[in-house]
Length: 292
Image 1 (tube, rainbow, N blue to C red):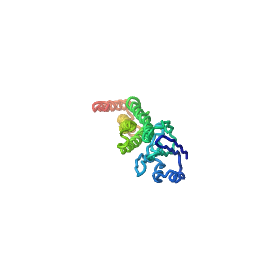
Image 2: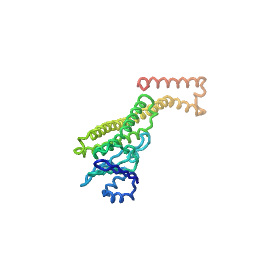
Image 3: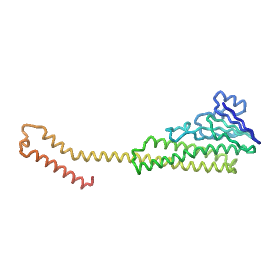
Image 4: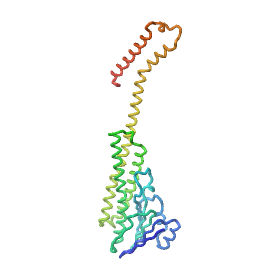
């Protein structure tokens, strides 16, 4: 466990990094924090939330810490969380992962609400790049499917893009709800308005990405089915030509003693001409039915 303490004019900021279960009771007794809230702060995959007690505000927010190129589809693999305990004169942050944006060098006169919003803004900003990257990937796949060769697109890749966009949408939407719950307290801060605008923009893009990914998966499967149908259709046409020819060749290949055609002088020529006639008739029939 790494504990960092910073003193400002009107409050104190205590940052606790990578505590384990054995540190829970120590943190609870030393800083007089709620044990169950601290337990929530260490629970893997916990979604953003807000709780208010008689002496503090408790928040959990998540920050994106992964890479969209990785084949992952779980929220705990894509992001890590920070828990905030906001008292009148103390701000506690508890987290497992190391976050560079926590190395803040602010003026001593900064208020506790401003520091809190600045950290939350940095966390929500981490979702901007993966949101844009996933949107760009979907656009590239769309071009490949419609303008190039759809076989170059891996269905597995499209699945993970869809899953990651869906998870980002879910986390951002819940974060937006948490931010709305404290609107009365922070709505006059420009940082608060920036966070709301940022979340709205990210949510809109991820909603479009999820919708586009669903449409692309449907389109991809439809094109694949169409290609398969064309192959089956081509094989069926070949079968229609060769089936009667195979039948004729099979009949005259039996070599029975009492087959008068076998004794004909021009029997071989007649059979070839008969086969050619069958091919022509089938071809004309296909043309009239517009199968070709």
